[in-house]
Each structure stands twice: as C-alpha cells, then as structure tokens.
Image (cartoon, rainbow, N blue to C red; front, side, top):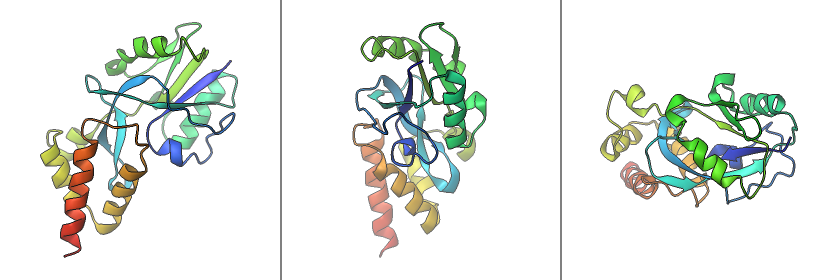
Length: 190
C-alpha cells in the first residue's frame, strides 16, 4: 500500500519518530477546514480540523510503512494519542475512521487523490477544544484573552508553534493571531 500522511502543524517541522519514505512534505495536499482551535500542552493554540470553517491546502508526505495498521500506529506514537484520534480513509475499500463531525472531508480527500494515487491517507484527528477548555466562545477576543493569560514560557511555546506553521496554512484567524501575539509581546517588554 502507498499511504499518505497529512500534516498542517508541528508534524511538519518536528517529525520525531514519524517514519516517512523520503522525508519530503509536499505542499499540494487536499483542502481541509483547518484553524488554530485547540488548546494543547504548554498553552499552545494548535491547528485542527474545524468543520464548516474555511479550507486551506494542507501538506502531505508518504509513510514508509506499506500497511495501514503500521502507518497508523507510527502516527499515533508520534502524536502521543489514542488510536481513535488517528483518522484514516482507505481509498480502495472505503474503510474509514474519523470523527463524525469530519465526514464532510471525505469528498475532498477523494477528489485530491485522483492525482497522487494513494491507497490510503492518515491524519491526526483531534477535535477543536477551545470552547470547552476556556468555557468561552471561540472568537478573536477570547483568543486574545487566552494568549494574554499565558506565562512567559507558555507564550513563547504558543508563539513558536504559530510562527513555525508553514506559510501556506493561512487560516482565517492566522494573520489576526500573529498581530495579537505582537501586541502582547510589545506589552510584556514595556
């Protein structure tokens, strides 16, 4: 099997033990609704699939593994998550695992795969959690409040994640979040 691994965040610049066939991330992946909508370890605001959000072209690489189970296990290990949090779609059998909220991305995956011709695709399928973690609606005002409340160490981690995100992952809120980070940094250095 030829298996694609989709990426849009830290997976691209921090592969750790993710084993790829050639260590090349291609920029012409499928278009998916991605946004900085998950509060992760260390106060980072990370990218996840956010259904009904604006779509951006994500990146992909080829897994070194030629069986779906091993490729999924490898991504699960890199992400330090549960097997249920690894999404996949088998283009041959139509077998799939993904959050029900993300069912709409299947048509994008199928349309995209007409050219690269993968047998399957895998990705990290963590849900957005900003609203649940912060007990506030997901909007720029509340994102600003969240980032302002981070410790210096957490703020540096959040800033690093956003600035290391590949430029093509230009989400609806990215430019505004970068501006918010700049304002907070300026206030902290006064």
